[in-house]
Image (cartoon, rainbow, N blue to C red; front, side):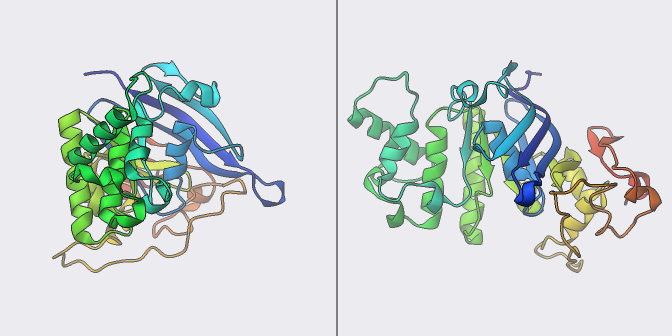
Length: 321
């Protein structure tokens, strides 16, 4: 088995909060991405999925403090800041941002924005760069002539395809896709997922999908990490998370996901995630969990093995269906 392209260990992120209280948005997240992997980061909004990825890519800005380890091909890049990550960003590691209309510059043509990401060591003319941009658009299912169009002239699905083309321009090995089907109708959602699936096969890409929708995750990814309150609470093969979840949050997240033709009733998860600008005592999910005991309020459960290739962070894992 090939070694990881990307290794993330004990990643923490803090933001400057009101009243001088730091918001501990990501708390000790670790994962590996190997060539061809299809990994999902799953959870509700605000659980730290996007922040984790932006921290890995060095895109959080001055308001954030980041600690831990991020290695690309075994090379540590986190302590070196933007200068250390810059050679890998848009090259080895690329991202499709959530909300294509916001990700694209409205006053520049799609082709010029894609051409800007082409590898800098290729000295080509503007015409050649636009031709390559057109080829990338064709790869994602669009006509090459769209290089001359502006983002507002494209449909939502076409804008998303253009963003995927731009992410591919640097010939990445790991493609992060942050809620790539947000605000798209179900037909276009399916088309975008099929496109990512095809590109991963054709190009040997590793894909890291960020989503709150377990149904979408199951269509593309074979491995998932469920996040809650800034940390991983369960991880393992996607099928196992559906059929035998080992953390109550994973189980409730699945039960809150509509499944076409399913006879089971939908359930909502009561309450909301905890505030992260104060230290958390015990299990962060305990106020919303249907099954708790005294130690849940005293000790935060560690992420420990519960089955082959499965880990969960729950004191009651042995009794979780």
